[in-house]
Image (cartoon, rainbow, N blue to C red; front, side, top):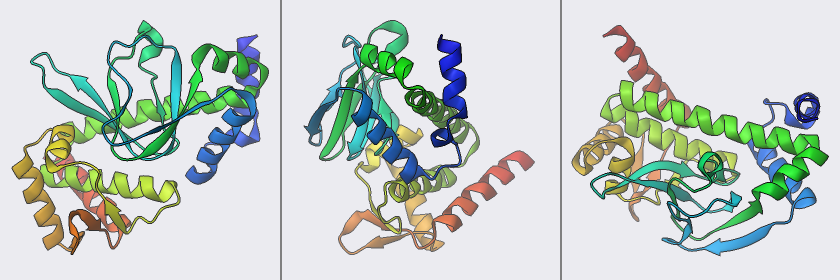
Length: 247
């Protein structure tokens, strides 16, 4: 039964991987609204969607706002392990063990839609395209984790910061927001924590990127960053990858 459902979902035209991100996000939210009971919750900066060790019962989809996920290191330090934007799912790490493996925290005011996992599976059995959307979200999460690991292992500090800014800008564009000027919802310390570098290294990298005119700081503060050409920022990262491969 499940195999037949998966085959049907894979063939459904709504699940084509080439669909633009804004359309994919809209399809996901509309699909959930149509087939699953949703619990909506508004959170403010610092509020938690769930905590490490909480019993797993639901998955959560971001409808608006920005969120981060944190792991607690053995010495008690918090480690930022993920950034999440509109259309992203939270809570996949709880499926295997029955408990959430990290904290999910709002970076500003946002809304999450929570769906019970058992109800979602039942809805997927009834409506094959919904299962395809769920699998697609899981696949994107795996790919994102892989790309983050490769970035940490292969890119210089400057290229890592550039890649971080590129990812943030592209996420804004996928949400239908402007990507030429972004407001970072993280402190320099949080960015360094996420990228595996010190605050000073992050600041120096930002300064060098500004010197190369890949970014600019607005008058309102150094959290507001102009990105004249996101593609140029991506090309800078690719040059960093090429230099690494030649070493």
